Amino acid sequence: MHDHGYATLNIDRVGHGRSDHPLSALTTTAAQAETIHQLIDKLKQGGIGDIAFDHVTTVGHSYGSVIAWFESSLYNDTDAVIATGYTDRVGAINAVPLILTGGPAALDPVTSAEPWALDPGYLQVRQGSRTIPALYHEENADPAVIEKDNELANTVTVPELATFPEPEYDGMHKNITIPTFTVNGEYDFLVCGANQQECATEAGQDASPEELEAASTGLRDWEAPAHNSAACFRAAAIPDAGHDINLHRNAQQAFAQIAYFADEASGVHGENVESYQAGCRTAEPGVSDLLPDTTRLVPPVPVDGVGPLGDPMGVPIGWPTARQA
Image (cartoon, rainbow, N blue to C red; front, side, top):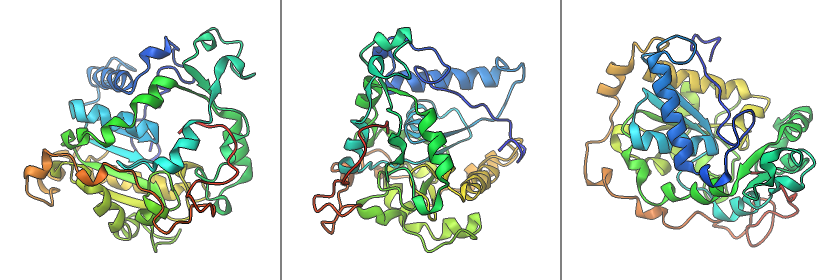
């Protein structure tokens, strides 16, 4: 995005990476969203790098997308919000084993020496866990990248895991009234519905952003009812990619998709914000903008009785015992 002309600010959320590690009880999804809101204010006021940015767009991945949508639902204070690796229907059957794979940070050799690791609410993703099939479509991933991903695996907290699902069911995302875009991997069975059918695409790795979006109407139509018509919801599926779209061989395709939407909804200098928001709405405002989508009360499960790895109950077989969602 920087090379495309956009100033970028990459952050570690509170309790993760180089950021502070307060009491784990304080690291809820709401608290993470409030932190992002404060950063957005600082960007607009010139409090970061002594440059005031009139236009800001948030981009999240997986739990980062949860936070971005939560923040947007409360404040709508950016030009647009872009989510990757997430929808309003996380598949519980496939996600639960993933969520339960973290172990106490105090018992992990990577983090046991850290003072904050004594807090039992901090979980460390165990080494070697990133090879699980939810994350990668392995035939399109470099083994060295997966190895590096394992090396850099980091923390998650119990309150984060406990508080992220609620907005999927309470209609909160209907409060988002800024342009919203979702980009998911074709084989992301965490967020793509039963048997990944909602992210199915006939597009290939040579497809342009326009072609990818045109081939992703199923994902758009499936997810759009969870959003306000003012969000002008759009979506695209990246072919031959799993959950971690940035870590596949065709990652540049995902980057181009994000830049394509950012250009349309904002522009490098925010020159397209007003015109895009004035004309992007494809549905008239109505009662559905206020009510939760009741079809989301039950998370998706495999519909043909065969899970992603052949388990008749739909639960992947032989998963390693570690990793955060």
